Amino acid sequence: MSDDYRDRVVAFVDILGFSSLVRSADQDPELRRKIVHALRQVSIVKGPIEGDTSFRAQNFSDCLILTADNTAAGLWRILFAISDLTWYLLDIGVLLRGGVTIGNVHHDDEVAYGVGINEAYRLEDKIADVPRVLLDEKVMEACQTYAENNEVASAYLNARILKDTDGYHFLNFLLDVSLFNQRGNPADTALHAHGLFVDGTRVLNELQKMLDGSLDDPRVYPKVKWISELWNDRVSRPLEDGRQPMIGRIKFP
Image 1 (cartoon, rainbow, N blue to C red):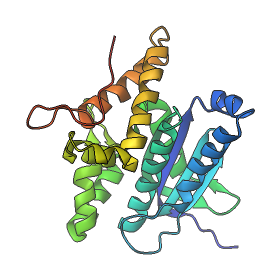
Image 2 (image 1 turned 180 degrees about the horizontal axis):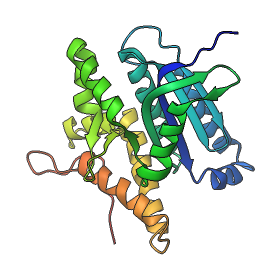
Image 3 (image 1 turned 180 degrees about the vertical axis):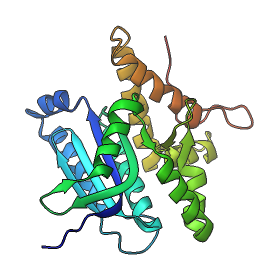
Image 4 (image 1 turned 45 degrees about the horizontal axis):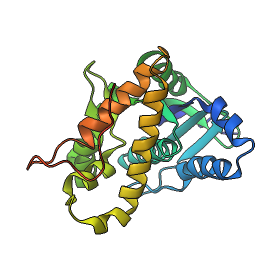
């Protein structure tokens, strides 16, 4: 058996509140369907750059390990998979936190281990804190390198990665709904049938419920506050002409 232990893009993802979600789904077939759909999308979604990525995904309880080749295609395959998973989980009122690095790992159908996984887990567990997916310096250096040689990688670097106030970079999982909400005409009621309006409105309502329900919980409130502020800043900021966009803002007490 060959020792397939090498540099790969590695992500460790934690679904926050998954135990409570599973309990709710125990007697709710529709919720179980949505959970399975969200988890399966990780392996189904296609990255924006063509090429074989040797992508692998493994989930156990509330955690997922994702790895792919250390290439532009592999890196963005991982980031798109996490972005889609984050959105589908938000749609059912669940938050996600994670870390992405580049490091040595062995990952086959049965076994996943390596220093890359250790580091991705450290980013998620010790540093991320709020529901964001952190990209470490190795990933950012790779993003810059790939952007120099690939127009698609350059466009996504500038649009799908943000820098937080503490200096860490994180995945902008709200880009699609942000673009829809900022570019759509609020007076065009036909856009209310668009999938991003329907899903975005539902996510807005879920976030508002989470915020309102966590006011007295010092463990949960800072996490929901962070993502709610991100929503208002990226998705529902006023338009250039001063009008409010179609999908509204989260209201703070």
